[in-house]
Length: 391
Image 1 (cartoon, rainbow, N blue to C red):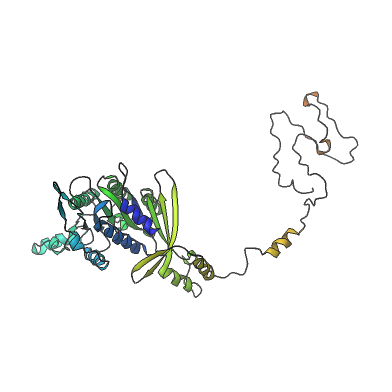
Image 2 (cartoon, rainbow, N blue to C red):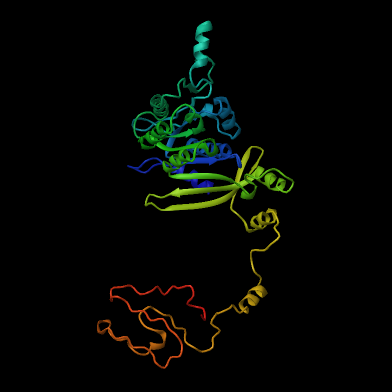
């Protein structure tokens, strides 16, 4: 399923449609959203550098980590960012760019509000730009969504050049943007990036328990894919730490569920689930097996009652005689519908207009006789809960 997301981001946007957008959300119960983000980042970067993606470049908007962190991460994964900055020019009949793949980082982490740069300029006339990491562009005002959008587009165009070549956008934390801007401004930024004809795909990370539910709803509404990271055992979520819940908490510490919702162009929604396993800062995905379901049931807390019946208990329950229940004596079950007496079921009632009421003189029992005011009056409902009782 994680491979399906990678393929969707790799294949990019169709002609005349918005770019695919992915929301990755996690919570404190299963805080592995950044692992999923870096996994998709490295996979997409590999596809771009191998010229297997629609996009020919990637713009990483770094809010929660420094640019040097991502450079080291990509280098550890075997992606040489330094060599990716080089463009290979192939001479055919004319000069054209072939396999020009680059990764640019917009640094919104070092000085998001421009305070450090202003302090250095007032002290010694220096600039923070000289201290920024190589290959990263510094953003000094993350409050201005229009300027942030322009910076992302300019970096992307600088990667792929002019023409119809596209690039991808990755934002490592939407929560950091929401600290400085409203949800409407952030939604406008994401919408503009999706609708830009130079953007191939876009994905971002959100910690859902750091803001209101309506913020998460807005982000999910703007996404064509939503990836949710949830704990392996929901029963441990929100429980107080005690000796009984320790196995559940330990199980959730390194494993969890990965749910993805795909929104198709025809309006249909497809939901898929699988498990993930985290070890040594790496995340691995696998399908949910029946053995894991048995393990999960064994980890659930034991209760003093059973919610299911055995076969013998079901047979014994069927033999119980309930009071007033029809016991199959051969008599037909008659339901009074408000139009005639049960004892007069075989004979038609006299018309109401005559005003003469025919009664059963041979009947020694009392009975209730009811005449409708008109034929337009609806009869009594046949769904009387006492119709199956011998009353």
